[in-house]
Structures are given as C-alpha cells and as structure tokens.
Length: 417
Image (cartoon, rainbow, N blue to C red):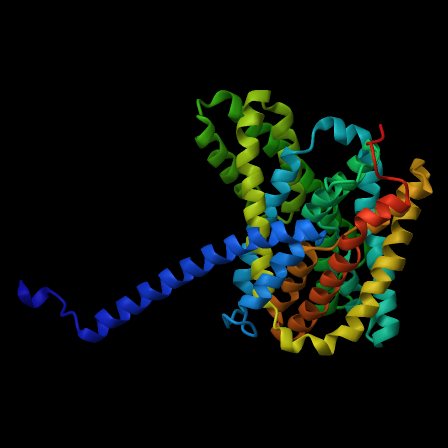
C-alpha cells in the first residue's frame, strides 16, 4: 500500500504554499481596493467629482504603471466580469423602475434609446472619419461604442443634492439610460460583422438581426419577468433565499438571451421592471437593499477592472484623437440626437439641453470596446485606449458640471411636478 501513496516532495510543498500565498494576496488586494473605492467615493462626493471616475483612477493606480504594478490584459476575463456586472446593474435598475415611470416617458425614452443612439453613432463616426482619415465603417464602430449613456452614472447624478428636475424629464433620462445599451450593442456587433465580412449582410439581413436582438430580448425579458415575479409569490422563500433566487434568475436570463441571439441587456432590464410590478410591497422592500448593494459592488468591481486593463503610459498618443471624438460626442452628436428626438414629444428646449448634457458615458462604452479585442487584440487595444479617454473626458467635463448646468437651465431648488 505504501508504494501507492504518491511522494510529496519539497518542491511540491513549496509550489502549494506559493499558490496559497498568491490566493491570499489577491484576496487582500481585492478587499483593500474595494474599501479604498468606497473611501474615494465619499471624498469625490464631497468635492462634486463623479464617483465612477474615482473607481477608474484607483484601478489605474493599481495597474502595471501604478504603485501595485498589477499586470492585467485578459480581455476574455474582462468581458465575462463586465457582462455579469452590467447584467446585475441593469436588473437592479429595472427593479427600481416603477411602471408609472414607464407611463411617464416610455415613448420618448424608446425613440431616444434607439434612433437617438443611431444618430449619435452616425455623427461621431462621420467626425472621426474626417478628423482621423479612417474608413467610414471602423469610424462608425467607434461611434456605436460611445453612443450609450451610463445608467449608473445618470441615476447618481439625477439624485445629487441641488439637482431638482421635472418628474417627466427624470423618468426620461433614467428609462433611456436603461434602454439604450441594447441598441449600441446591436450596432457594435453589426459593424464588426461588416468589417470582418464586408458585403455579406444587406439591409434585410441587418433588419432581421435587429428584430432578433430587440424583439427577442423584449419577449424573453417580459416572459422571464412574469415567471420570476410569479415564482416569488408561489415559492416559500425567505428574504435571504429570495434575493439569491432573483440574482440567479437574472444572470440565467441574461445568459440565455445572449446565447439565442437576443439582447440580454434588454431582457434583464425589462425582467427587473416586471418583477417589481408583480412583487408585493413587502417583497420589494426586502430585496431592494440587497440588489442596491450588489449594483454598487458591480460598479466598483467593473470600474476597478477597467482601470486595471488600461495602460496609462500608452494613452498619451491617443489623446488628440480622443479629444476630437469626445468634443464631437458631447457638443454635437448627443445634442443633435436629443433635440431631434425630444422636441416632437413637446419637451422644452431647456429639457432637451439638460438631457443632452446629462448623457454621461461610463462602463458600457469601455466594455463594448473590449469586444473587438477578443478577436483582434492589437486593433481592439487601440479602440479600447481611445474610448477609455473619451469616457474619462465625459465624466470630467459633464459629470463635474451637472449641478452648474441644472442651475443655468433652471433645474435647481424644489422639484418640479
């Protein structure tokens, strides 16, 4: 029997101890970075800076050019973590969206989240093509990637002290930020397809893909939300188990939708809305704190990871082009898209101006810029670096001046009805 027992060598023991040490070190770093992120969020709130910018900065400081020197360039892992984090954030956003908010501004939100995103992508793409001398389709890809606003950033800013905007306008911005990711994801995949295989997809094929993504996501979201909501009523779940059940259901729904070619982002957002509508007030009160905490944790992890993925010493060469793209996005593309889509719905010019300025970019554009890098790391890393800078500029320029823009446009003081 003794001969069957494998001999444990000193080298094997040392390797095992090293693996355990690395695991413990990773846990320590993760916990420390999360704590530092919360402290940074508190400090940024006091000085009026966007909290998400603080998370990105911490990730960069922890990266390979920072004091901790953590080298991280795994796009596949980043895509996985980003998908999970965004699914949680959007599901929680849906849980916080009452049906009354949808009634308040559903149609203008939907038009802005679809046609508005397409207009934004087209304007930014055209400007990038002219400024950088790039072919039109790759330029449009950059426009599609930066087109969506950040649901988490918009929600935080709308609730910031001193910013009191009309109820209909607040509903518009929150619902639009939850609905515009699917359109941008669709355009991103469509344009990647056109770059890889030009001339293989006509207008009818593109329309079929659009309907598959949007209608499929909507149907799965509504069906999934109906099933989840009724399961919450029928299953004898304690609050702790109910929250875990909801989390698993949301992630499962997202994965299923993506696998069948539908929009997982749209599915989980709509499922969150319907789950809230079907749940009893007691159930909603029980699950809300858990999912709000999970959404915050997802934001922290997502932005820290995106900051780690950036390589600061390589970014300066992309700054001139990124500044042009950011200027086109902030001062031209978003205003054109907003005014063109909102004025027919009888929003005032002040409301349209505020909507265009509050369209902050955040994690989703950086996440989308990872997708091309999964197949072509070199080309994808160039897009990632440019979009990363555009997002930082958006957070700095727009995020830091939301309060000022609210005061200038008359949206400060007491909330309007």
